[in-house]
Length: 141
Image 1 (cartoon, rainbow, N blue to C red):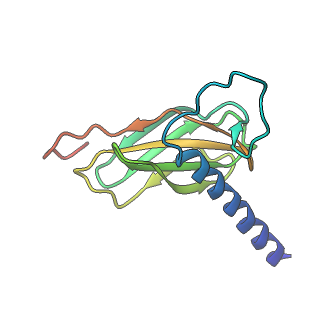
Image 2 (image 1 turned 90 degrees about the vertical axis):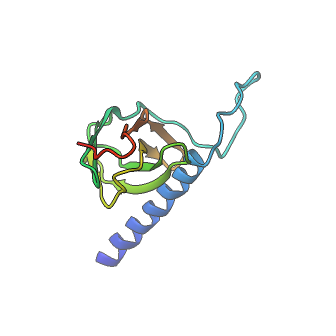
Image 3 (image 1 turned 180 degrees about the vertical axis):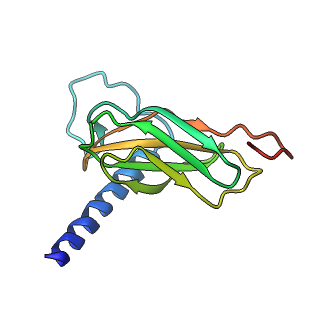
């Protein structure tokens, strides 16, 4: 029974990483469609996005918080990276959890983050993006 649970958890993780790669690996939004919708393997918006994304900057750690539009029904993925660069998946967060702390960050570098609600293997919703605003040479509060 435990082996089955571990295998299921690994399959879910692989699916979520695949969705994140498709979502966060895009450089630009696709052009608006002019005809009827075509069948596609591209993920689609599956529900409301996480809301009220905020960060607390404690220099080498950043704590992200958000609201759960699914009332605990879907997992989340946290993506982040240095400001101005592509974001990468940093963590998968269990359904119902609405915070995540990133540790071991450089106190002199700005970072940006977003949270992705995963409604299914091909349906998601992405929050807005939040970034640190550190002054060069200053220690953030």
